[in-house]
Each structure stands twice: as structure tokens, then as C-alpha cells.
Amino acid sequence: MSDTKQRLLDGALATLRDHGIAGASARTIATAAGVNQALVFYHFGSVEELLVAACRTATEARVAAYRQRLESVTSLSGLLDVGRALHAEERELGNVAVLAQLLAGAQHGGKLTETTAQALGLWTDEIEHVLRRVLAGSPISEIADVPGLAKAVAAAFIGLELYEGVDHDGAQRAMAALEQLAVLVELVDDLGPVARRAVRARISKKAARRP
Image (cartoon, rainbow, N blue to C red; front, side, top):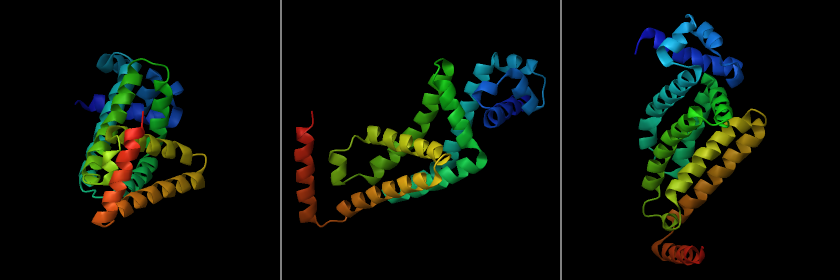
């Protein structure tokens, strides 16, 4: 990738952080990148295409940076620990603000909507891999919709990142509640064989009743 294209991608992210999606014009992005605004259209064709590219490349880089840590997770509590670290780093880097602006822009449809969904899907896929691994053999796995659970976890973290901006204490309590649920699942997994069979039977019975 050329230096100019990278500067434009970085400028797009900086513009989202500093001016929001409404202020993401060719002029403001070019100013942030330190280049002529005509280069926005030369390299990307439109501001929307530049924002799409910035969203995609930034997410791919962040997912890659965390992939090894996610691969080492062996419990739900461990997944939440990684989530806490990710949350702190993303807020420090200003990426939570970028995410909020991308989600706002995605509400209007178009390529940004599709790309934002794909970007979130990258995180969801990683979380799903972790959940399949840590829940393997657990009674919970017999009733859990793992892909759906992965989306729920991703949505919870996104919500907490945005929620913390207006209610820090509330976000911390919500995270603590998720950790309590994780402990509960792990306690079920630590039960003896007789108790595990009983739990498995109850779970299977409940699952059979679901519509």
C-alpha cells in the first residue's frame, strides 16, 4: 500500500474520532492526512469508499492483534478477561469513538452498513471459535446456540463500550454481572459425574420444550 493511501486511511479514522461521521468530508479527511483532497477521489473514488476501506483495514488489524490471545483462552472467565483488556485498549486508542461513529453511519444503509456488519462479523467469528472450544463437553453446549451466543457476547461488549461513555459505574456493574454468569457456567462444568448427568438431563428436557 502506498504511503498516501495509508495516510488517507489514518486520516479517515482520525476524522471519525475528532469530527464524527457527519464531519467526515473529503476536505477534513485530507487535512487530517496532510494531503490534497483530490487524492481522496483518486485513490478511493469517494469518501464513502474511503470510510469503508478504513473500517475494514482497521478491524482486520485489531482482530489480528488479538487473535493469539483469544486462541489461548480456556474458559469463559478468560474470554471476559481478554474482553476487558480489549475494551481498555480500544478506548485508549480512540477506537470506541470510531466504532460509535461507524455504527451511526451504518444506520443509513449503503456500503458502510454492509462493511460495518462484516467488520463486526470478524470479531464474532473469533469469539465463536473460543466459545466452541471452551464449551466443548459442557452440559451448556447441549442447549446453547453457539453462533447466536457469539453474536450476543459481541453485542454485549459493543454496548458496554458505548454505555461506559455515559455511565461508567453502570458499565462496570454490567461487566461484573457477565463475569458472574461465566463463573456459574464453570461451576456447572466442575460438578461430579452424577450431578453433571442430572444437569444434562434437565437441560435436555428444557431444550426439548423450546418451540
